[in-house]
Length: 71
Image (tube, rainbow, N blue to C red; front, top):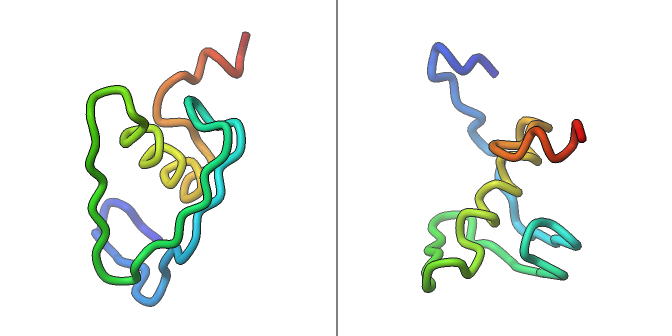
C-alpha cells in the first residue's frame, strides 16, 4: 500500500473488533458492517479511542500518546 498515491486496499475490511485495556475501554466486542458504520455518543465516551485502535491495527503506530510507551 502506498499512501502517497492514494492506492486502496479493495476487499480488506474489519468485521469484528475486540479491545481489552485500550485507553478507556476495559473490554469491547463489536461487530462491524462491511459497508457503513456510524459512531455516535457524548464527549469522552470513546469514539476517537475506537478509531485510534483501528489506526493502531492498520499501522502498528499510535496516533497520539507516543510518549506513554517511551516512558
